[in-house]
Length: 378
Image (cartoon, rainbow, N blue to C red; front, side, top):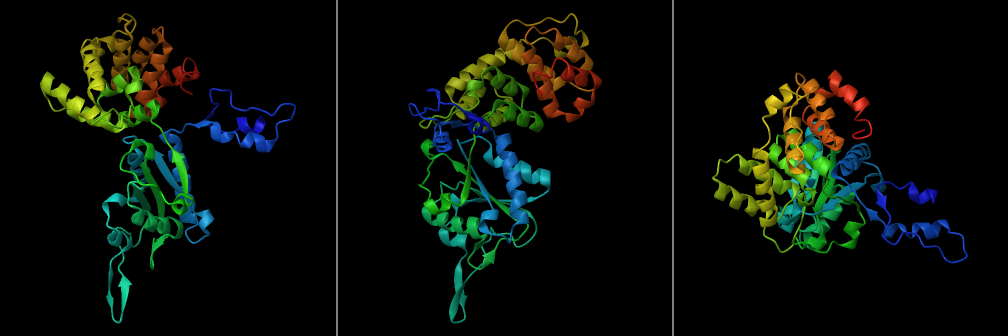
């Protein structure tokens, strides 16, 4: 079993996975044939590491063999943040990011228009193709594109060119799209294109999403709610006009800042995440409004009340993560140590560090991580 157990992020199917033929020793080939029965779970943060490694390799091997230029293809449900993760990579690396939404192009426009050139014709350089510099060419909505555009994408992916026009050496290619099963206007992908891509199936992850929200300043009520009701983080329904996703909750954060009355706010939120999720979220907001004064709680960490309602605990935890600073971190830690469920303390520290990495240098935080927190967040 050494070979199979060394594979990361794999989960055995419910039937126990491997079945060996009666009275025979399990051969390596028999073990390998079972891998496709396992469920592969990949977080966006894990796919990000693979994409970054691919970018480095593509740039270093821009003139190398096709096999040296592995192009990642992120595939997952709508609203996961696939585009955001590529934009984040480009921003962190100070690279240009050219997003080409393949479904929005005419085939002639994507390939470059043919024009008269003396006695013949020539193909103009497409306006989306960079002429120089360094960056990421992001081929988005790949399965939503018509097959004619996907055939053009196959040449871009495999040969880094369209006609005679080549992608500059400093550019890497990444692609993304929604799952065919989601019926998001997808077309069947040609086999030659599939063969040229590295498929990375991604799913929504609670910690990844909250970390991103904290870094972007998303409303703490949203962060607290999806920790309290993680089943509403991403609940795709093909026939619904609106359903919860990391992207739609990000937009709910904007709606909360509009100053709408209760009825209008409820309708606006329902129009973004659907009525079932909106009803739960509106109920949670009422709980959130009943949270104790955070400044008073932080000022009196040894005597402040400890909520026993899980909803209130999630709300308090989110508020503490938002309020935590170098100046008050010691008091926040003292309060967290009193919580009977230390998982909530881990939520606070992780979310606060996602918002401000410098908090890791505060002595009280360091000591908590090395003692109470080492089994919870490390």
